[in-house]
Image 1 (cartoon, rainbow, N blue to C red):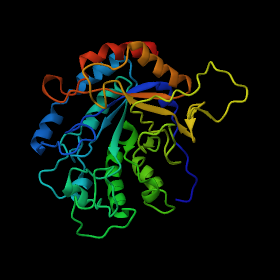
Image 2: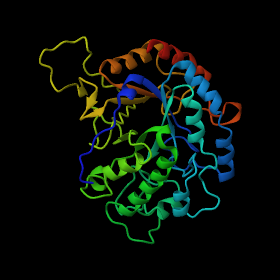
Image 3: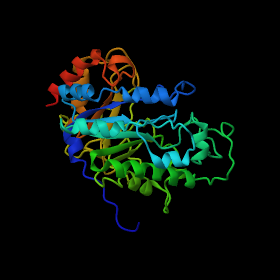
Image 4: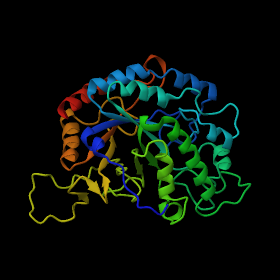
Length: 351
């Protein structure tokens, strides 16, 4: 742990210019109290995911990478994990039998598209058994996660840093990372709101050990820790390789490259002038629909979607767009047809 930390090379990410994030979940993103699934129903849903069809859609619009959610608040995940099942004693498991991640990267790689994954920093807030079993039962108010004292029963003591939980979560992540190896190219970790309390410590578990777990199978994997919506966009840790860059509304535009200043300030309107923030690759994440994984049609005109993407590219940044994804029926795993013309137009403009 004493050696100097070196960030992974994010050149390929920057050169990709843009990509997609797909929320494939058992309930809408960040929702509470909306889980009505059973493990059998979840397995049927994941089994029905049309990997071939999605791959063809992504290839047709020229996206060079995509993020897939592993799971979130409900405790349903789209890949099996023996470490998780050993720690959370539920039968049947809420983890799918199909490794959707492996099936996706096998198909995507044939088209030159890289796969990255999304995971929360904490135990599933809507799964009390998981929160208690994983020791993610803080004595302090973690309502930003959906976890509050009184919503779970602590049958064990936990320290303020949730050290036991952190070690459990790292072990779960390490199993996934080692299994997927160099086929998974990055991680986006949501909900790192309590960094000073949990991760900014000299001794493990901390940001470094968290990043090392994600990089166990691929040392070149890119890691980002999301502090929530922050304007200006920030680098949350020296152990992340790119900015989480979550934007829900206003877009901080910064300085356009056509504005020349021989003695530029370090930043302009909070946006860096160059493609890194605190040493991390600049990445901006927002949604093309009405909200995360929502909307019947794009909220922007083609021209605006292109110019926003192009603007951040000029700054040396990367733009990731969230797009809805179907989860049932014949279109399970596919992007809505209403979004495809804009995505194809965007892809053609970014070549």
